[in-house]
Length: 544
Image (cartoon, rainbow, N blue to C red; front, side, top):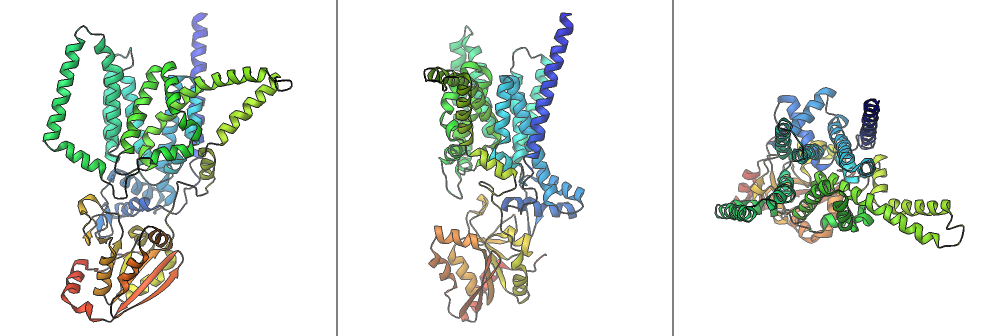
């Protein structure tokens, strides 16, 4: 009888887990469908354009260059295009939806396992109303795939050191962790930050307690410290640390060490400010899983905050662990606050001290706390298909295509501020005016961008040299870029590029695009400097 009752209890628990996981998975999928048909973003165009080449001839060709970053993901998008029979934004976004939903369901399930059903449901709510999670799950980029792979690898490491694991299970977990983390690193170098956090957790929460219980703990710690110092010395003397530091701190757009603080303060103002207290409460009540989450979150946020570039998508992969930490802390804090409020309300005159009134006041207070978190309205807007921060899209340049094609037919040089929009909407370009340098280009004016194979410039003086060298040309820019340029730079310096003897300038607008068309009848185009510049640029024939 006892065995039968135990069996029924186990089946009921498994049934509840299955329902919980299925609900979170389906809710995550349906909450991540609002932008499937939205116009592509800038970074998305890299995969879209390269995937079309993969579909055509198996290459990663992007105009006259090649987009080599995350070729596996680009091939996946090409395969989705082949399933659709043509390039399709919806099909290209579906993998990110699936990976994002699986990560949400997996994180909610794991948090339920280590913290109980209440923690699981709180984490599920965080994941379902997670603005950057919803956004990235509808973006044709590899961030949700990377997040899923890192989550699998991290949980495999966590389970690897769980007490009572048998040897075959440990061997399987080692293989799973290595495979998942290796594949994650193929998509994002930030995986190494997560691996560093995992190593610190193993050292601090697994190895150190065992060492401290050993009779020879002092000798062991001395030896390990010596080995660590020797490794650091070798890495420093070999130049490895310098190379890592250079890559870590490279900043094409400027570093902002407060970026993640400001984002979390905006999305989760009340909870973010309580994070240290929630971490203490979680560590007290859930020491092992909370220690795991604290290590990943603290190491991840510190390292990413001081890196060369900050963006919410770079901490996507550690966010589920932060939500789990918050949920464990809230599970301890909220009942204590509710009890304190009940005692405070019990001293008030009726009807405020009445049981129903007290519950109503508590519900209203909790509702206010939830609704004032910016993440909720932002998430709802994203679910409904409304464009909301941080989701931004590239303007549609299609209206400018006839005018640009006419200029190309007349032999004009085409300079653009957005090379991917030019390729996607116009069919080509000759030179890009942008700060989108790759490290290996060393910010050298007129260096060829290996991604597109075309020259890149960022200095108005370089634009002036083109105006002087070419008798006919056009600078094609989006209106939004023009606004940003005038806000952050001197408009006079840019317009000075067209102040060349013999040059006339006309402007026209086409949708969201401005076309600045110059004609040069002066003698400058015939001198040696201009001929040398034309040899470098060499527009060639557009491949439409």
